[in-house]
Image (cartoon, rainbow, N blue to C red; front, side):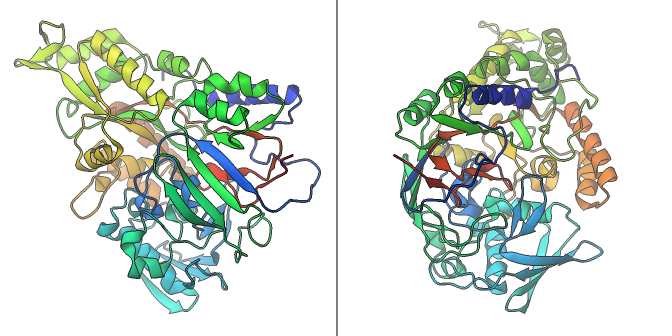
Amino acid sequence: MSAPRTRAVATLAVALLTLTACGTGSTTGSTPDAGAFVEPVPGGTFRIGTNGQEPTCLDPHGNASTLGPILNVPFADSLVWQREDGTLTPWLAESWDVSADGLVYTFHLREGVTFTDGAAWDAEALKINFEHMLDPATKSPLSASYISPYSSSRVVDQYTLEVTLSSPYSAFLNVLAQGFLGMVSPKQITEAPDTICEAPIGSGPFVLTRWNKGQSVQYSKNPDYAWGPQGTHEGPAYLDELEVVFVTEDATRYSALASGELDAIEFVPPQSYAAVAGNPQLETFTDFRPGHPFSLWFNTARAPFDDVRVRQALVAAVDRQAVVESISFGEWDAAEGYLTPSTPDYVEDVEGDLGYDPDRANDLLDEAGWTGRDAEGFRTKDGQRLVADLPTTNAVPLRIQIAEQTQAAAREVGMDIRIEYPAPQELSDRDLAGDYDLSSGLWSTNTADVLFIRYHSSNITTPERRGLNGAYLRDDELDGVLQSARETNDAGLRNDLYSQAQERLVELAPGIPFYSDPRPVAYHRYVHGLTYAHGYLSPYFFDVWTAKA
């Protein structure tokens, strides 16, 4: 591949290690309190600022926003917990058995857990949650796809549920560790499902108390909590109150941290790395999200991107490395393919070409028949301009810059990309309807099965189920490889299959991959216990306490 290998992890690590040299005690890992033990101080309020990608629904099963887990994990526990090294340990499930054919999972559930509305956690509650994820009325954009092989379940006894899959699914336990599949009160699901989007109820260490739309989500301590995951403290959360604040502007987010208005921020913007490093009151840690890089995806089901030559042409027309260096102030490199390097089964140096080559772009468009030119210089065919609509969010500055720089690159080879910024609900509706030529986003998940989620033809949205193949890609060869990779338990074979899948995707060009997504966190030195939930990389607050002056 002609694009250079992503060096973002190393680059940001160096930046943060500089912080240590400045005497702030920073770390690039997810255990910022690696020093001597200090007795936690219960109480107080903790406020963390995140970016402006506020979801339209807070139901964990109906939310696919990148901010879903940071908002879900405070109130919704998961079946299993993923450690930093990737191993899975018990949480709401004490243990599990898997049949030899990989089709039957038997979950033995933790006793003594209750939801904050008094509902019991048991096998029936788990069954109801699985059914809620798959219910078309939930309009699940993510969890339904993640557990699509689920076929049925049987209550064996009060705390044992037997789950049968339609086909082997090696990623099943991994996805169950994600905050998107956290457990919701079965009482709320059965008696008041219409309330879940606005005020979901879980069994977690915090209770969601208020959603200030456009501003923040507030939580209060669950005083009865006593079932945190392995490696965390016993008893309820230390904090009395927690608030996750939406701050769209990057500069404003850092300023609010520096001034003490916020106790911590995530998505530290690249232009603030030096300021964080130079502030002796701050510490930081970082990691890069596994899964799919941030991309512009083509809608391959309609013109002009139903023609693979047009897709390949736009990939070649965009100098991805220049774009990524521009938006990151030189801190990141362009992605090399359709998986991030932190993803299990990522393969480096797969065959294919995603390199910048305007001459190739022009040749491909000529070959595709776009040889005419209109009065403004845009390419035409049969009297029609080569045009593509890109509706996207205006809440994330990096995405705006990528859209605009891609638009400029497309203009150089004669393609007219029209950028639109619809309201969040309209954007969500258009995404569901496939009403776009280009869409933008990334897809973070803890397995390479993200390629099945994003590109297998079974994941194209239908009237019965919302799928996540937003590229509307249909390719029998790719489908076969991804299905085989999902079903095998042979690690070597799986890695080989994912290598084949990544090479095929370069040929099919379903999108333009830009960068692996870092999720750096900066916080005041009086903050302790802040770490990541690794099932889906996001800040975790159960062990957090503060020692404010």
